[in-house]
Amino acid sequence: NSENQKFMIYGGQGVAIVNQFNVFNRWGEVVFSARNFQPNDPNFGWDGIFRGKALNPGVFVYMAEVTFSDGQTIQYSGDVTLLR
Image (cartoon, rainbow, N blue to C red; front, side):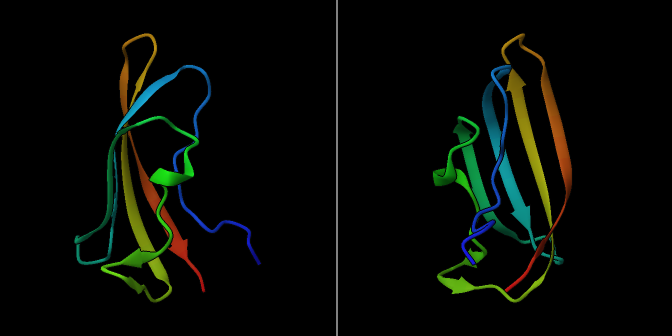
């Protein structure tokens, strides 16, 4: 199944830039980090790999900081479940 191969930031025309996007494991270690990119770009998505290895299924926390074209910056966070 090729569905949902990457966890990434999606946004509409109102998004100017994604300042940062981090994914953390349950110990708070950063397993993915990207900065200063446009939304909807799979090149800046997380594929469940960390240090060259596929991580075990589990729940990960994400945090993203997004600046909109009106200059407003908003922080988003939540969790994502990695399945294999």
